[in-house]
Amino acid sequence: MSGMEYFFKIAISALVIAGVAEIGKRFTVFAAIVASLPLTSILAMCWLYRDTKDAAKIIDLSYGIFWAVLPSLIFFLALPFFVKMGLKFPLALLLASLVMVVSYSGYLFLMKMFGVKI
Image (cartoon, rainbow, N blue to C red):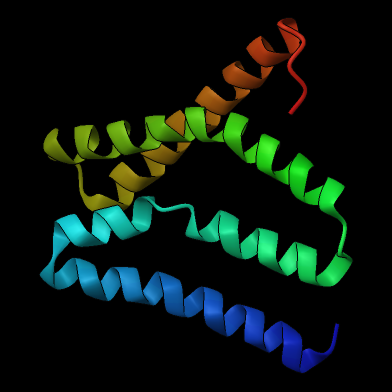
């Protein structure tokens, strides 16, 4: 991959993130809908397929994302909980991230117990 291709990937990905943040300043609900779309996943699949042309890798990534989304949802419950408790945003963000990491750890353990490979 050339430096220009890599820069293009970064630019497109950054524009998506910045766009959601800007939309969120004016239209919170619309920004939430856009942010909830699997834009990162879609971009990652596009970049992966463009680089490898390997459909099996896309299938594996798609299944992996499906199973990994569930514990990440805990973050979106924990963050507003901590902010409503009166914690400052950076601390609430850190704690919500830690809760998510713990959730992922427990989730991966359970998935392994049930034979689900992520």
